[in-house]
Amino acid sequence: MMALNVLKVFGLAAVSFVLAIAATPLLTHYLYKYKMWKKVPRLKESDKVERDIPSVASLDKGKEVGTPRMGGVLIWLSTTLVVLLVFVISKIFPSDITEKINFFSRSQTWLPLFTLISASLLGITDDILVIYGKGGYSSGGISLTKRIAIVLLIGLVGGFWFYNKLEVSSIAIPFVGEIGLGLLFVPIFMITMLVMFSGGVIDGIDGLSGGVFASMFSAYAGIAFFQNQVDLATFCAVLVGGILAFLWFNIPPARFYMGETGTLGLTTVLTVVAFLTGAVGVLPIIAFPLLAESGSDVIQLLSKKYFGKKVFLIAPIHHHFEAKGWPSYKVVMRAWVISAVLSIIGMVIHLVG
Image (cartoon, rainbow, N blue to C red; front, side, top):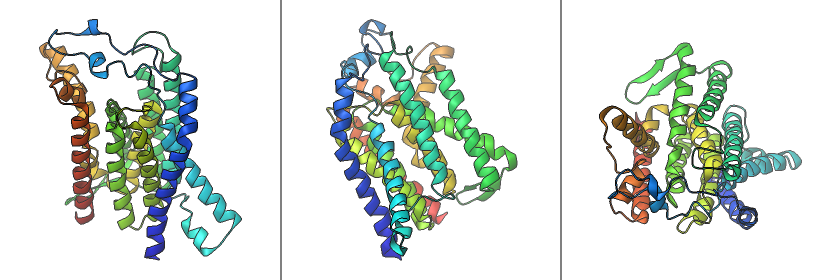
């Protein structure tokens, strides 16, 4: 039984990776043929606040104009196809093995799959609007206010699904225990999803987001597996397979960027997985890179508004290190190391706490 579970988790992750790798030439051909990238950079050199500090535009060196968005399609589409493929096989060729390999279940994978698809479709809508929109960074796509509203709506649906369907109304804090929340569980779920969504700004340097997301979902795959949530562990592992395939083509020089269709789908489903495993208490540890990214933006904004000065040379924080003179590969690889270490620490704390 254990051997079959291991095969299920790692084998299907490999299938997802191979499927995504095989699909990449088709996706790349489409993205480049139809020029699915921003037509103008988010900022111009003249937008610099201080002459001795480089702008985001100078750090990007114009790569966002000419490099397609929507690479995240590779991740959620390969994951969805693997789920459906295994499910169909189990129905057409019913047996103990095919039934066991099937990981589409109402209690473990229905909600994260629904969240992944719905949020990713919202993200691809935003990507398309940005690509064909006119003007700068803030025009063309779905406004931030509307995206926040939609994320909160997805969180509302997910929160009530947990509360009503799964009868979950508490969260576990390591070394403390269960804390009952009652109906407050729903708004806390919504806020958590919104916070994770804000970390999507991590998709800012070639290779950065892919490595970090792979570590985070690997940690939750491990947590789910050790809790005997094998279907959920398989879902996370299949996601990791798709993310690693994306990362293969996203390392410098990136063939495409993840885009909103990737970051929105992954950040929202990360919230669902954290609550499904009961490991939301270690989410701040495992997802610390996302919190650091969005937190640096918030700190920068508040500091400039109330104190008239900046804390970081450029926010989010990965651009701060670039502005200090770090090569982009050093920023990315150190972020990978930090993410891997924190993911391991978070997983261990949850399992022993």
